[in-house]
Image (cartoon, rainbow, N blue to C red):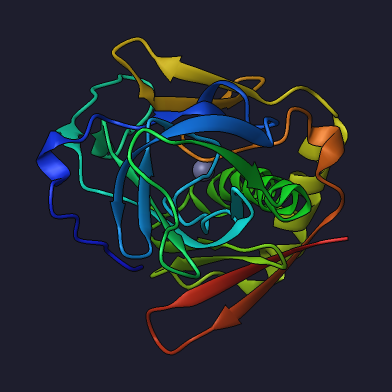
Length: 245
Ligand SMILES: [Zn+2]
């Protein structure tokens, strides 16, 4: 993950993240607040910055290709919920867009943002699929032992979960079945913001709730069929590969 150093970071207001309210919004207008070489900060954005394992969006700003999107560190928020564990979340963050060329913009200029929708939609399908797999792994293996998720990587062609647990390979077909049975219910996927801040959201499917700041499809019907593979990497790492057909 790249980090961008801005020379007036503290003066910039948090970026309005339009995908929180509507992950299906593909374009918007925004005002340029800061320009630094190939980096641009705007008042609002439809671009998802890399986080929670989901890679950054692709797209363009006034026709100039966006190469990467990252968040600056924000305020740390601790949420205490009795029903689910919520990781420490950074809120009020500034989103930095990196272009493929020096930014040809001036402060105050209005620009048009457009994301690569087919790419984002795939990421949304993969991110939603990943949540079902997380839940199924927990149901199948998590009764016997505590699961230790070490990493999560969501791309447009696959997703991967890294655990320091060793999973019994005989039970992987059960995980696959449970995942697809849940998806086959075809219910709506609901994203709810925490009452304290819009920057913390919960993914809900029936009675399954998970904290998540990513973008998701509206309905399980949009995901497709999930295939799962487990690969052992030494004594203390198992990788779960997720693909969609
Ligand atoms: Zn998530």
